[in-house]
Structure formats: structure tokens, C-alpha cells
Length: 195
Image (cartoon, rainbow, N blue to C red):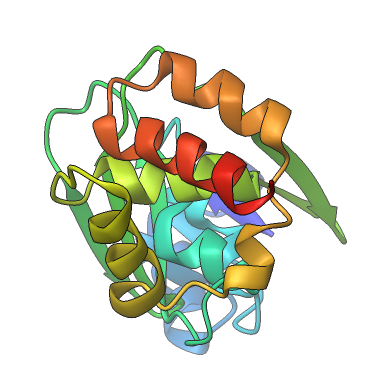
């Protein structure tokens, strides 16, 4: 369970020095420090369950979400998340893994998100449509279908059959709102592929 320093110190208020008690508990492994002011009680907690607590508001997206949905063949070891209006990328190295955060346009930030409950945790992740849009938004501009196919199937190694499973209505809605030529070309390409 994720806890803040304030929550833990409140729980330890009966001790003469709650901060010293917390330090000893961390040394014993009863609390694992994630980042400054944030702790986890279970060392085996998967990192993706912590991503939204480390820096936010944020949701899991980009390579992590593409891997989560099986759209790319590689295992993804960095927990990649989207934020908005933060103006710079953030990276956190923790005992639970590496977490990175980067902006997407604020107008599309709240669209295409799913909240998934897992045990006593919940995490927010981009839908498969939103994840591919976020990924293409951060990549170099392509100008035609062939360049986009090369980007999708060679550079990103996205599975073509998985790409065909994208919900066209959701993709179309996102393409209208993303200020990204790559996303607009993707929308047109998938519609052509499915004809």
C-alpha cells in the first residue's frame, strides 16, 4: 500500500520521535521508499501500480501501454506515463523500476483513459487507441503513408493485426483533437487498411 510521510508519521504519533521510528522501519524493510515523501509497504508491488502516485496527474501510456496491450513484441521495463502542462520530462529511478513522464496536449489529456482495479490498487492507462496516438505525437513528423508504415511496423514493431483491432470511432475522435499530423495520417491509414 502506498503511503505518504505524513500518513505514516500520523500513524506513529505515539512514539517520542515518529521520524526516527520511520527511519528504523525503512532500514528494516517495513517501508520501501519510492521517492521523497512516498513509501510502499510491499516490495513485490508491480511498478505500474505506483506510476500515478509518483508524479501526477498522469496515466500510463506510450511504450508501456503498447506493451501492456500486446501491440509491440518487446517487454517494456520503463513505466512510461503522460502528463500535461508540466513543460519538461521527468524521470524517477526507484526500487520498483524506472518511471518517465512527458506531456501530451492538455486538450486530449483526459480522453481515452481506462481505470483498472487490481487488488487494492487502481491505475489509469491509455486505451490502445490513445496509447498509439500519444506515441506518434512524440515522434518525428511523417508526411505520407509509407513513412508512417515504416515508423509503425519497422521502428516500433507494432503488430499489424493488433493495429487492425483499433476502434475506428475512438481513433477518429482522437485524430480530430490531436494537433498531430502523424495521428491524422494514422487515422486515414487504418481506415484504408480495413477497406
